Length: 430
Picture (cartoon, rainbow, N blue to C red):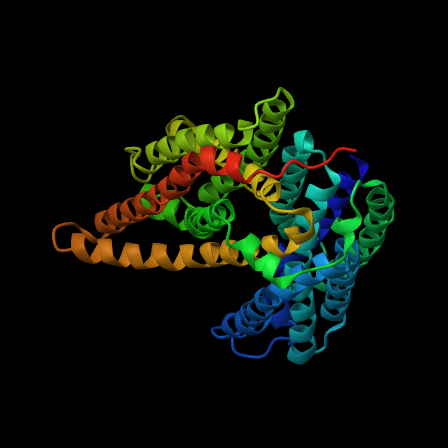
């Protein structure tokens, strides 16, 4: 369990560095490190620090996953950890756009590249009956990194923040590596730490029905999350008429409910598996997604009195929002657990690399789809409604449509009741 805590802290620090960007990008521009006028610097920064590095990193994530399976997951963890820390040091020392871009690119490559290795490591080194908890720790730390990144960005000068986080990533990369090396030596099969890798077998693994189903699931799972996380504040302002501050507080509280959902989902599923319920993870996920969809729809369609911000008025729909996020999130650690349990250990990082690309595509498509839907609904509604009412209604219809996309993962979870049993790999405990 100690190694899971260390992995969690490593994940927390690099996600904190990732999310810190939002709080410091203007300071970078004000210091002259980012060129451009006030109305254009965000586009320049977004292109060179986020979009281009993300595209490069996602393209490289499959080679990183293959290398993790071929050479050893702990070795790739160290390489990617070093890339992240070097990238953060370069950002902290940057004097211009070129050096900043290089720093963010190295960081992004490391961050995307470490994902398949970490996900494979958690599966390899955690017994099946505790695997949900292991993935819950990972996901909870990714969520905690969001508010922590904003806090660090607000409290520290951006150079100090990035340099300090680079040092923490470097230290914890090696703190994690030492116990992992010892754990891998005790595992029943050394194949999980590098060995004979066959591309044909890897391709066959990726195309098995259960894994393909999980690939489709994660793509459609990510679309609503991408839209909700990016535009939740705008939705509350447009649909409810509340201030940006109030909307931000509700979103912050929602992040806490998401953390609780990750932990509960992992622990509850682990308990079912420990009691001999092989399908426990699938059942918990079906239950969580079903309740989550219904509660989220209740929240989105709640007849909120526009413009009111009294606590008594805010509380009922806010509770629905928190509960919807929490119940839906019960499935998150179990998606990774089930994927790991239908994949041979020596190909786990490869599979998780493909999984990561589809997850990122879903999250990336979500905000665009929301914007297109809102424009469509507003155009349809505006002839018969006043502008503000049309905006509010279009926002509600758009989020409703987005939330209903979770029905696709729900159907896939139901299919997995059979697919998982057929594809599940029973690992030797000896």
